[in-house]
Structures are given as structure tokens and as C-alpha cells.
Length: 292
Image 1 (tube, one colour):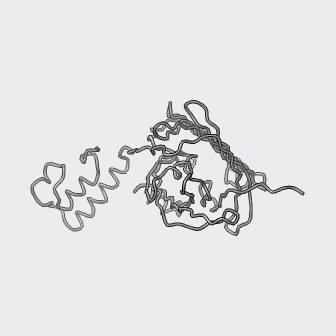
Image 2 (image 1 turned 90 degrees about the vertical axis):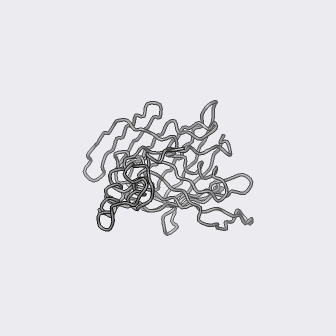
Image 3 (image 1 turned 180 degrees about the vertical axis):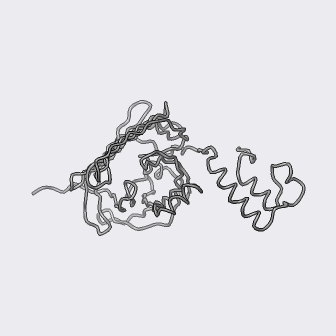
């Protein structure tokens, strides 16, 4: 169990007059009231925004294996803008999943995650390539868990300027880039979960992603009616990043994912942007169509 002395809200309890972990707060009411209390609350929020990220890896309820799915990407008007594949294979000790999307304008989204799954899901390697006019810049990103090293290469379409960023990240155990559908399929019925993601802007920042069930929707598989659980995926930037994003109008939108959970869970649909400042697109499963 985490010690209360490590939590910023222990100090907030002191400010509000409740007993806390700091010596001068014990046994009596807080001397801070009114504007002073509000100022101290704001100070504590800013001071402790960098506290160590707490991680609780998601347990494996359904083991992953060999899978191939066909994908379609549509804009908000329902117009198909890309097609692709979900490719997953396994070997002893790890699973490799790849989402490959080819856009009509020649753009490419190629995302690969390598992970282990005993007894919890653990991301081991992540690689993302995005290029073409569907994105603001060409980008090539890689992250390794064993070393914590990341490498980000970008080339802006507007002026052709290239950037290379590299360094190390302290990765929580529940960082799940490229694995959100896998995580969603393994949540218990009605469960809410908070995981971590690496946001590339293009500098990497580890943020929280809150996954909250938000009702059910009916879908048709041929003539069969199925029930899909709708999860809202809310990025949690923290106090400082959240204020900064709001000030420049770059607060990320909520994403959405639908999972059929009965018997064996299955991905149905994802709604959200694939890169910062890009439109919301829908990624859905599709079926092959015979060419006449």
C-alpha cells in the first residue's frame, strides 16, 4: 500500500483542517483559511505534479495469439479514407501486434507493439511510423523498455525542417502504447481502469489515460445483433500540462472504443485522432469483398 506521506492530498487534508501526516497538523484544526488556503492548494498542486507515476499493470484475462483483422478508416462523414490490417503473431515469451493503415492520399500509419503477457501485460518495445499528407509531419518513433531509451525523428511538411530527439524515459509498468484494444478486451465487466501512455508532441511525455465504461450499443454482425461496451478514453495531462494545453487550445479530445465482451471479447471500433492536432477518425473491422 502506498504511504499517505507520499500523496499530495495528505497535505491538502491538513490545509482543510483534517488530521494529516505533517506534524503541525496533528491534533488540531488548520490555521490556514480563506484565500491563504486556496493559494496553498494551488501551490501544492503545482509542486507535486511531478510525483512518481504509480503503475498497476493490467492482468491477463484472455491470452493473445495469432490474429489477422482487416481494417477500414473513415472520416466524420463516413467517407473511407484508409484501409489496412491488424497483424498479430506470438512466440515464446512475447506477442507482436502491428496496425498497418494505407491512406488513399498515399499516407501511411504503421504501429508495432511487442509485449509479454504473463501474468500481466507488459510493453517491451514500441515503434511508430507516420508519413504523408494525412499528418502534419513525417515521424519515426521507437521506445525500448529494457533501456528506457527513445528515439524520435520528425520532418515537418510545412518547411521540411527535421528534428531528432533522443533520451531516456522512466516507464511505468502500465505503459500501453499500441495496446489499448488489447487492454480494453481484458477489463472486467463494468471495470474502470487508468493506464499510462507516451504522448509524442513530438517530445515524449508519459501521461495517464482513463478508460471508463459508458453504456452499451447494439451492433449488427450480418443479421445477428450483438452488444458492444462503449469505453471513453480520457487523456489526463496533470495540472501543469493541462493548464498549458488549455491556454494554447490543444487539450486532447476524448477517444472512444467499443468492445464486444460476451463469451470471447472482440474489438469493434475506435474513434479518435491518430496524431496531435489531427481530425477524429473511425477505425473499424471490415470484411473482404469479392472482386468481380
